[in-house]
Amino acid sequence: MAVTKANDGEKTPGKAAMPKIKTSGLGASGVLLSKLQQVLFDCWSLETRAQEIPVQIESKRNALKSKKSHLLTGIEQLKMVDERIKDSKTKLDEVIRRREEAEEKLERVSTQREFDSENAIAESAKKDEHKIRLAMNALEKKKETIRSKVKEMEDEISEMEGRIEEELDALEKELSETIEARDKALERKKKASAKIDPN
Image 1 (cartoon, helix red, strand yellow):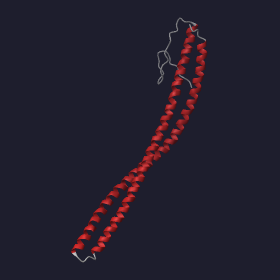
Image 2: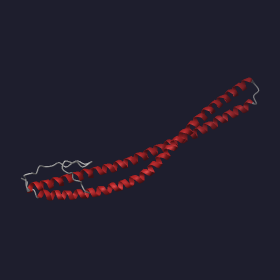
Image 3: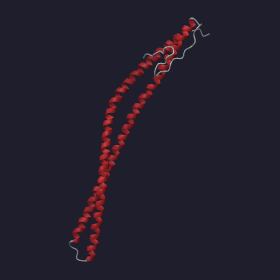
Image 4: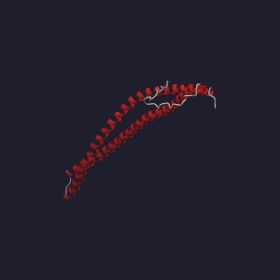
């Protein structure tokens, strides 16, 4: 991995410019110091990138994990709504049965008191039936909304998995190359340092 050098007075876009050491008047030592400075800067740049890449990899994995978590939540919500619809259907069947029984008895009653009692049961059942049907309609709409969101998330995850897999492969390759380049730069640093008089 090549690290671009900044020209005098210019900064490389997106990268920190290498600080300059004043080497004028130092002769051969100045040249060695300048070379060491470049090697140290390369080491720093490569080490920084080697630390950034795993963070990027983890971030992409977490983004996909978060999407999948939202999908599971949506699927659970869908199951819960289905259960509520099922319960509502059971209640509706019970209310319809109660209403029909009361309406049948109304045809056979012989006293006003019996008529009033069965009529009250039938009217109450009708009201309950109406409420349950309204609630079921609302649940069906909610189910359709959730189902639509779940389908949308499934499509997003499918597209995201393909894209992230390619990005992760590229980052893994870059990390391997960066670590290799960093190790070589550290070797150059060792050799360059050995040539400089400690004094």
